Length: 218
Length: 218
Image (cartoon, rainbow over all chains, first blue to last red; front, side):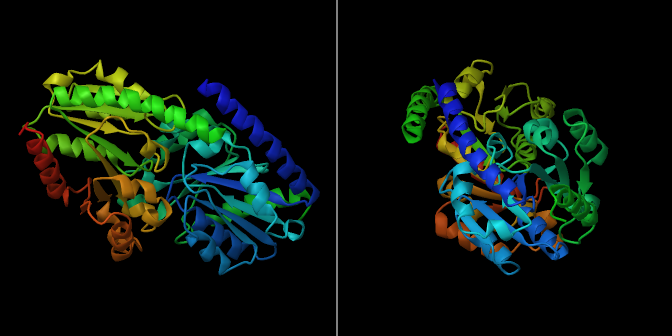
């Protein structure tokens, strides 16, 4: 019984995801759904990206259980920010995104970053209509995350490893991490970075810029 | 409709939680359900605790989406270890625990640590029949976790802040963290520690020892 209900939820979600996808396509906006554990640095990644992508018009949808902390941080840089408070729900779904999109000027944007709820499991199953899912892991979480939480690594179009400034004070084994990611996902790029120091962000910015150009917006 | 189903799931879980609780009570075993984000250090906390609680017989139930990594680490120290692979499910439930308990010698144990799936949201709603839920946060996740993921902080009998060895290289504001925990949960102790260096673990060991004595097992 439980399984049947879950498929209903996914079916319902899929319908709304298609509505979002059509809107994104009509508006020629690149949409990136950012997945990670709590505290991997999603908000820092977004603020760093906004600073470096100043030629583009950017919107952000912030997902959190509660608080408007992250949206307030982002609003220091741009106006098109919506905070979704899920009130306990462990992931964003396409219907939440559909409502949030009414509050930003989608047709005038080049990129929308969706910061999902910090959760390395549940958000992965929910298509939001985005162009790309990316997974943000971090050195301080340990090198075993691909082995223990494989699905997000499999389903993501780019794997970002944040907090490399902590490599010197941690026992994180990068080869172990990389090999395990590669077993799950042979194709997607793995990008090492520190959103704190800025190191390694160039690769990420190139990746995004290339995707925007591909979309015909560059 | 979604909400109705969720309550059915919780009702079903509650029945199994009561079965577990009765067994724990009959066997006079202290059961601690450890909640945290991925990579906060649950397994390190357990291994450090095993080393320091050598007067007690300890069992461990390891919850993970996949892999037997953590159980293998623990088995270097003790025999009574069971790995639950949830195969995608984002939390442990009481029925999984009921099955796992058949594989360890519960009546000869003083303490059972349950390492829940790394997820700061979903596991909190599932009573496993444990005596205490504890929440393990960590410096590298940032000081805003209580504000953004309040429920676990509210529901836990102790709040542990791990990785304090990283305080010097982070912008974690301890007063901010503490004040926010206190607003959510005025009573439960907050214990700072580093499972890497061992700093601060004494408080945790005293807390556990006191709970065992209260249980009549000390």
